[in-house]
Length: 444
Ligand code: ATP
Ligand code: MG
Image: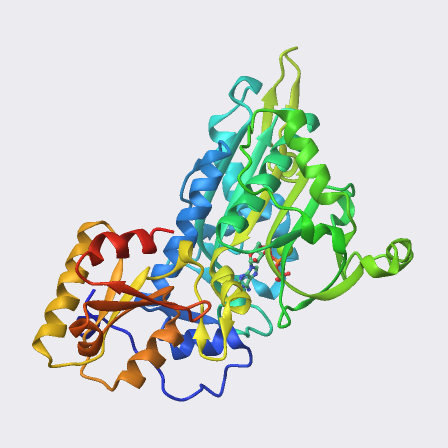
């Protein structure tokens, strides 16, 4: 993409409404524009990141055996009357009436809708287990929308719903979600710690929230230092291996890790002092096994092998896709701007022309651009007639991982320069064979 042909509305001044770094940097780098409180348009750069996160989320859900669908944003109020949540949900729900006076709502979550789909088509244990998920906009009329996309009113969420014939199978679904979430966050370059969450009246151990540690997080968290040592890494996961999956879940959830909502100081005090840590965290996901809460109220029954009927066991599992964009920035930035982890970067590299108007330099930039694009890499070419300082400042701000710097002086000696945004390290690459050397460097 040639920058002069793109749409990258950079803000020169710090927007006064932004209280936290990610919000400020998203506005400054032209990723989003607020349309009303907590509701945003996603501009080209922001949309690219959002879609990359979405894609990773989809891949990991599919790898775990979960099935993508797409439910609408607008739901009939009648389904929520059945579950009893129409009134309970209160003023966070945006209620709408259509021209016939029928009650509708902008979905804040989809348990009712998915249970209705399930009960219309599945009646036998033979069709179980099944997990249906979608990634769709949600609306919650939050009292205090703030921090940009972190606490929006309209936000993009992955929500998956598991259906199982019995508790044992439902717990396996829960565990599968836990592992697929851990893998998703790791692929995004984030460490998200599963923390025991409130299950409300249902009880049991079967809800965890995933928190990314960050100073600007809204939750206070308490954890055993040991939890930050665990990672899935490259290990291969067999999602059909119930015991194996349960053992991995155990290794991640056994050390103490809770938010202020479930924190137990007495239990925490049993840890050796040097292992007791507290910090702030951003909730980027939650999983929940709640049994027959919705299947009972909405009458979603299945027939078991012995012919008896029972209510299907359910769980719901969410990832805050749009919130993750902000969380990623909170975890990856410096004084100059964003530092995108490669898997979610809007572009892998940017070519910076140090001398606008210099025919030879321009030609080399164009050639590098063509080579990289034909090798399948997503690159930006800063071909603006701007001062070099402005170009560097823009690229440091928007956080593209690699800067390919092309200037007449280096070129006359047969070189170009490659700068890694994260550590600022610069390497000279001889231009004669730049395409292979550059490609190798960018593929690490
Ligand atoms: P919170 O406690 O932050 O209000 P929640 O527990 O109500 O969130 P869930 O119903 O668990 O949210 O939704 C799943 C995920 O969706 C959350 O973990 C979070 O990442 C994301 N999310 C929830 N509310 C918002 C919001 N207002 N803006 C952006 N993302 C959100
Ligand atoms: Mg939650």
